[in-house]
Amino acid sequence: MKVLIVGGGSREHAITYAFAKSSYEPRIYAISPLRNPGIEKLCKESGGELIRGDILNPEKVSETAEKLGVDLVFIGPEEPLFHGVSDALEERGIPVIGLNSKASEIERSKAFMRRLMWKYKIPGRLRFKAFRSIEEAIAYINEYAESVAIKPARQVGGKGVKVISDVQAYLRKVKEEVKKKHTELIYEKFMRSHDDVVDKILIEEKVEGPEYTVQCFTDGKTVKPLPIVQDNKHAFEMEMGPETGGMGSISGRGGLLPFITEDEFKESVRIIEEVVKALRKETGTSFRGIISGQMMLTTLWGPTIIEFYSRLGDPEAVNVLPILKTDIVDISEAILSEKLHKIRIYFEDYATVVKAIAPRGYPNRKDLARGHVIRVNEEKIKRMGAEIFYGSVDIVNGKLITGGSRAVEIFAKGDSIEEAAEIAEKAVSYVESLDGWGLFHRSDIGSGVSLRRMIEMANLVRSVYSYRKSKGLFGKQIDWIPGRGKIGYEF
Ligand SMILES: Nc1ncnc2c1ncn2[C@@H]1O[C@H](COP(=O)(O)OP(=O)(O)O)[C@@H](O)[C@H]1O
Ligand SMILES: [Mg+2]
Image (cartoon, rainbow, N blue to C red; front, side, top):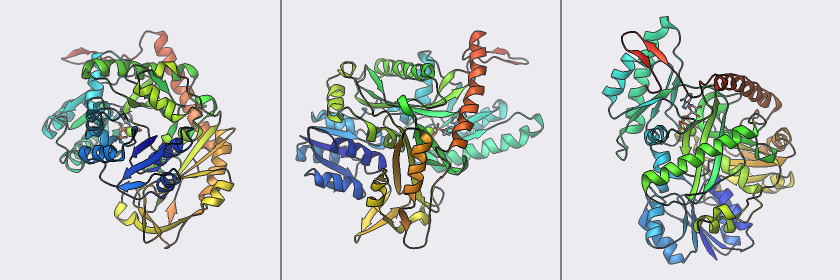
């Protein structure tokens, strides 16, 4: 059997790792623009190879797959899905795990996602307004926009969202300026170059609470969740600093997190199931791959959707794939034959922690963070019971060079999150910078302090949403504006 993995980051390294463990002993190929040494090694050991190539070109990827004669393609990142790589493979009759371009709209367009949730009255939806031009967005901000999140209406790889709390009347004018400036920035920096979506700016109501990700396999009908993971997005300790693609992530035993109840997990999965059903109806297509909810526990709904992924998260994938017990080839076959309801998916019962290590300058100055020589002592890391997953690195003249983003991710497991975090923390010291530039990571991820903070936040949110639920106010927010009267659900 031959498989082809599309993508070359830590998430794809974890996907390759899962295939390398398969009892079918597949020959593994990967296609990626950079030479990820972890993926390359696993490919070679299996008799396959890593091919450098453009993963956004549907023709090139499907041609490669056909030439290699692979039995299965597994797509890691979202952009190939948006570009129609999955569709091109299906056209050639090559089995592929990865949503088709129509279904991946659930991630690509945040406005499409919000409209879908409102149209099908799916719980966990937020009030929103989407704008096709900057002028319309600014006119709206002038008239009515209080505490809001302002976003690029397209997935732009995790940057560009600004959450603004606007509650003090005396600061209203200043806040209005901030909102306008940010709207202009989103348009200029993130949206001007994207002509594949009509909506440009999204303004949605601001909510607050602990965040978590529920990743699921789907065959377009059934949804099977993986253990819940919490990604820690900010660059510096205790959620300070700029947002990154994720500096690390945690997952608890039993597939849960210490601050999310089993009922909340079930409700989150139910929301994703409803979205899959709505997506099938709306797109008129069948689709196979991954769908994940990036969620927040809020006082409005309890489990609430912030955004959807049409793929596994990074770093979230690195928490769960190394402890996957069920053979990934069997899971893939169940997805492809639309028989996902027939198999049970097992994980080792461990808490897991992932810590990302990035070169200084990431995420705002990737130009400075790029091109530094680093060294990884794989043997020492393994000996500690941890695993290394390579991310944004390349091999140039035999040296490991940073690509500008998160260079490596360290995975560790334990009986508790804190135990796993301690192992990961120790392993971090075996990744070194060789040119004096410096690397950074977050030591608070998975620590007792950080967990207690999440638990307290969740308890507070839980008591409020439970109260609102008991009063029949779930998901409702009613304003009264002079001259306009009662405004119900929508902006
Ligand atoms: N409506 C919202 N209310 C409060 N915070 C939000 C809201 N939407 C997004 N955020 C915050 O901004 C972060 C990024 O937003 P998200 O929609 O996930 O965009 P992306 O990950 O593509 O940058 C979220 O993880 C969350 O912390
Ligand atoms: Mg996000």
